[in-house]
Amino acid sequence: MSRWKRFLILVPALAVLGVGWGEPAAASILRRASAVEPETLDPHKSGGGFEQLIEADLFEGLTTYDAASRAIPGVASHWDASPDGLTWTFHLRPDAKWSDGTPVTADDFVAAFQRLVDPTVASPSAEMFEVLKGASEIIAGTEKQLSALGVTAVDPATVRMTLVHPMALLPELLATAVAVPVYRPALAKFGDQWTRPGNMISNGPYVLTAWAPQSELVLKRNAAFHDAKSVTFDEVHWVVVEDDQTALKRYRAGELDISRVPAGELDWAKRTIPNHLHVAPQFAVVYLSINMRQEPLASNLKLRTALSMAIDREVLSDKVEPAGEIAAYSVITDGIAGYEPQTLKFKGMSEADRLAAARKLFDESGAGKAGPLKLSVIYSTDRDKKRLLLAIAAMWKECCGVEVTLINREWQVFLSNRRQHDFQISFDQIAGSYADAYDVLSGFVSTAGELNDAGYANPAYDALIGKASLTVDAVERERLLGRAERLLLDDAAMLPLNFPVYRAVVNPRIKGWEENLLNLTPSRFLSP
Image (tube, rainbow, N blue to C red):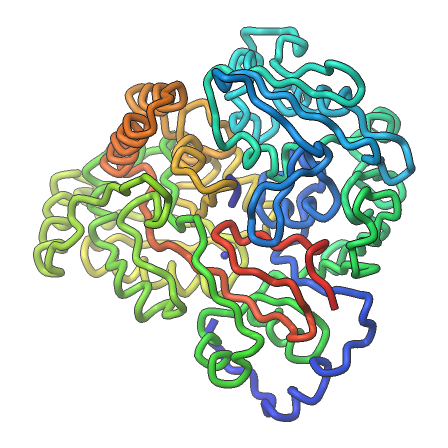
């Protein structure tokens, strides 16, 4: 899992087309826009999908993703599973090395997975790996020995994993940017500063050579990478541009090779540079996260449901943000093989009936008896988010008289607020790391740590997800996951808004870009 404009740019299109796009300053340099200043590049500690895009260039796990988000061999050249699906053995390639030339060994992976589940590290991704034997107990603190984790080194070139239940998609899970090793000597020597340029030793296609805060991160090709000969760009510059409108301006000026497209500029891009434009659905959902540890929302289901019913999702997707997003009445989008998403019960109601029901529930909640209800919503810097939230605030005001304050937070502060549950309502997004409903739904169990920033805790939901994780029969597993999704929707701890699409412009000189559901395109698979 992991965790997003409408003003026209007053520059003549033909003039811009002649600058930057046709003649790049350096064919061996790839310039990509990063939507945030990374909070950290420690893959076991970063909680944002934006950071993980950069980490995917720096590190490689036992498996990795190709340009189409398919799991392929990484440090492991091949693997096999026992007949019962509970034991997996990964065989490391002999030419796997750290960027300093040191061999990558099975012990590196044992240490990495132990660090991932270590409660003292507090990885926001730890719960993703509860499929490993002993992981749940170690994360919960009931098992104190990290060596109890079901990851062992058979020999320096062989990693064995023992699972608590079969998982056919284990190679996909291990391809995520968090399931990677870290260089233990650097961690021991530099502590939290091991991720800084000059300190970081990595094992991926690139190494970090410079990091100018709020400006850019420079990555250079790792000559020790086992597949270095196929990595065509000498450098990748991740340029920090938090605002999509600014990112597109810099793309049009030739300062970026790949950029996001603001919602309000999609029509312009379709008309003007269609051969640059890439639009693809994502396995993700945009939603409002309700702080279930703070009143007046935490204990008032009628209030939360009224707020959800007062939102006109079609208006948000078709008029406020008309850029391909699909109105979301479920947590899981269509298109996940074998899974039938649940839907909010008021889907299909007429506008009049829906608003009348919302007002009735709001009155019954008692939230407005002492005067207009005042709520606040936090969000990270982005014009599209603000426009969407302004529309929702207007809907709540008109339907229920709710007065909303929008609070803009810089990315690191925004993450900190969510992590500490320091908000009433938060703009949020959760994306699957691999194409399975369980990956997203498990992010809302009470033990999901930072992934569950709403603090949602329902024992019945936890039990359904837990039972689904142990169920081998595919049909029964999907049924259990459906029941869990139904419960999550009914509890209104998260209010789904839309299923996003990824809107990108890619310089036509760049080859190898492939749309994919996970919105992952590692730099190593791109070429000039």
